Image (cartoon, rainbow, N blue to C red; front, side, top):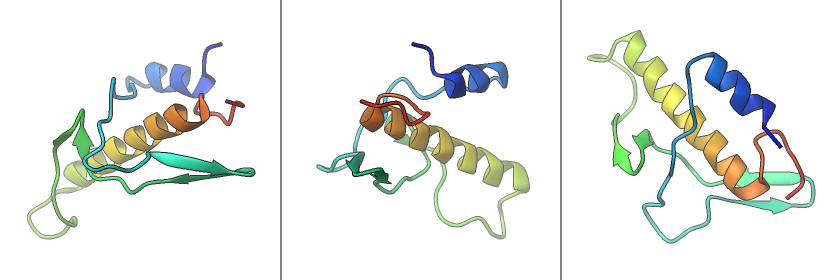
Length: 91
């Protein structure tokens, strides 16, 4: 089954990372009842940090948007890893 969220991301020119290795010994997330809890995210791609610190002086809007996009794609990757699909499909 194809995930409609991943299809839409592809239409927009985005893709989930091929992997999102953990920097520590923790789970990417956990399902409890009908809730999904995700671990914190940093701005990294395939285990390599890309952006550091808060957005402020010295950063432009495009950098902030790229960092937010990267975190969102990593979160969607974690959702898929834990739940089996980005759309809340049963495991």
